[in-house]
Image (tube, rainbow, N blue to C red; front, side):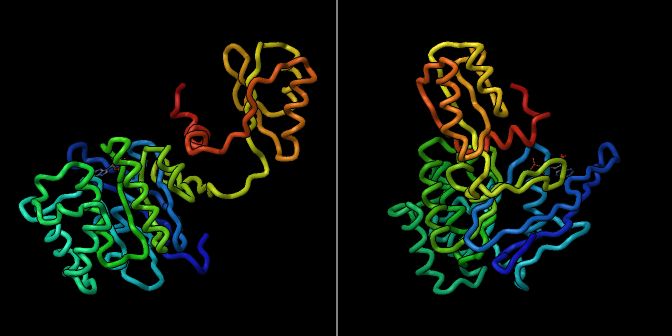
Amino acid sequence: MSNSNTVLSGRDLSKTYGNRFTKGNVKALDRASFSITEGEICGLVGPNGAGKSTLIKLIMGIEPRDEGAVEMNGLDPRVALGYVPERPTFFEDLSAYYNILYFARLTGAQDPEGTSRRLIDEFGLKGRGDDRVSSFSKGMKQRLAIARAVVHQPKVLIMDEPFSGLDPGMMIELRGLLKNLKSRGMAMLLSSHELNEIDQLCDSILFIKSGNIIRREDLDRPRPQMVVQLKLEAASDAVAAALSRWKSVSVSGDRTVFSVEASREEVPEVVAAAVKAGGRVLEFRPAQVKAEDLYTEVFRAEVTT
Ligand code: ADP
């Protein structure tokens, strides 16, 4: 699972929480393993309660683990990682600058004053650096939380639901900032329910279910099979029969939109078969594999449409 470019890996991570109300135990993580390579942005995706936050807390050492190991090429993950919690807290009565400077000193960052000023500008807080954090909007606080987390130039930035509660404009802005960090070689692990953001930003997805990483998907990997979508003028039995040669992904209720799975070489044949059967093709679109399709496939039982 890991290779020479691995910057962070977890092996057989397990955690059971004791529940003082029911006196029962909750197995939140059950031998979860993963690895992340240099410069990779990896999305951690799964239903509520799947164990995302617990995995992140175990990586960060915020919760003690029952079993397993976190490895960062011999570095101490608590020092060598950057961390943005789900609900970041600040010294609200202090300025943004002092909030970053506090972390810069705590983590032993080089030139803490200069670095803190630079991050204020880089994270779009120019002109607001000396204002109290209590006057900041949700989007500004999120950018500040990330600026603070990268003050010591970590190899990997870990974020728990970084897009939660942001409006679309803020999300686009944040995506740009994260891509910028990636261009400088920083890897990221981020949990999110925002599958569109995962599509836009991530190189890979870890799917987590009942405390287990059940699948890893590399989004940029060329696939032998692709999904082809055809939109037709009218529904016809002949076209449906012609397309039944390929595995059906979906068919619209009125049978005017067909999505089938085909190999790259077969794509022209799919269109030709529909036309030959008398179908008048209005649109034809080879569809990218999307996080949402993968999510539906992986968590089929949980998704009701
Ligand atoms: P996710 O982030 O995917 O929503 P969590 O890691 O928060 O999942 O939770 C995984 C499971 O562990 C859930 O069943 C949750 O109720 C339970 N859990 C999480 N934190 C605690 C805790 N501090 N005490 C007891 N149970 C917890």
